[in-house]
Length: 247
Ligand code: PEP
Image 1 (cartoon, helix red, strand yellow):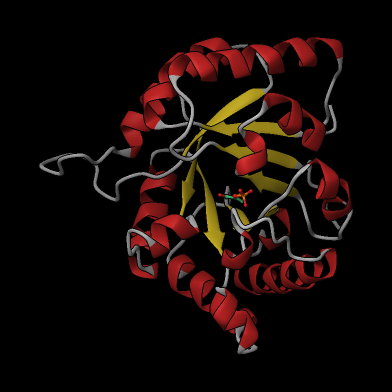
Image 2: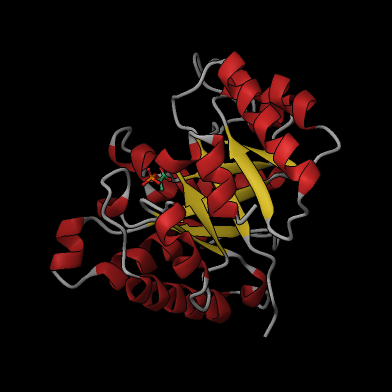
């Protein structure tokens, strides 16, 4: 079995101004100059912070992700941002299908498939989020929901640089974390899907997201097939982000 190097990604959502973002990076860089890390560190700031943070993170181990993208390359799409623009600004990764995009902005599996195509087409690496709601978990259809999200959005996926994030909707920003066992079982299910669907299915990092914090990160990261964490709330503070990353 391949050993994937673990990824710790911080999703800042619609938080942090430029000066706050730059201060955050300063704290990270200072800590990283004292201690080497084998995990990959990603930050997903607001679009407006990507270019200046790319400058601040140059020659460091910190890489940048965008939180969303348009499925269109250019044109009359007021308020949208294309993958080439994100690449230009310094993003190497794009989060696609975060539950807030699915549930607040109504993004469908079909739209997310188009966004995945755009991301890969631009040579960026998608972090594709999947996850069930509380109601779906209680109805016992969590596996089915996640498999459908994967099947419908990855039907035409080409290129092997995919990252999947399992983020149970009921655990995002709620303080409720999936138990390590819940995460282990769903990650195993996702791995089975990826192996069946792609010859390179073993190479796909599968991140867990949902109220990950310093107190539960190590146990989650110790589960088989948990290849990293996508962190929201606890990634807004550099000290807790570093603690989660094990720095
Ligand atoms: C997220 O938004 O991707 C997330 C996991 O948020 P939180 O860690 O706050 O639950």
